View (cartoon, rainbow, N blue to C red):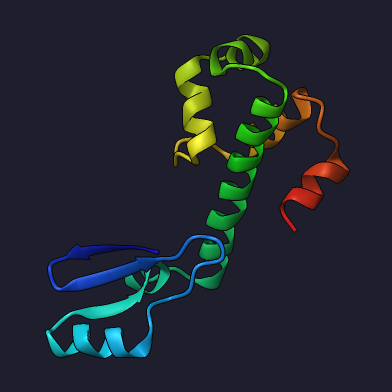
Length: 122
């Protein structure tokens, strides 16, 4: 679990398979004046906004995984997609400037099918 401390705010960002901090640790931090909660609570994200972000991250991770399985470098994939290496890096990291549309188009260009993309995001 990664936790980030910013001005008496403790944000938790659990990875896959990780648990949120236990109540004992949470109470200790709150007693010291920290607010403890999830990133979506801290940012005030709606359920839909959170789902959108998670969807985008799933597609980004799938692109990176598919590229590596295809034994392509970011430069090689960029040439295939008529893009740049830096754009591929942004796509794989889920950069806010990258649209879901671009991620889906890139996965299709790499040989994924609508069905396989649907499976990635479910």
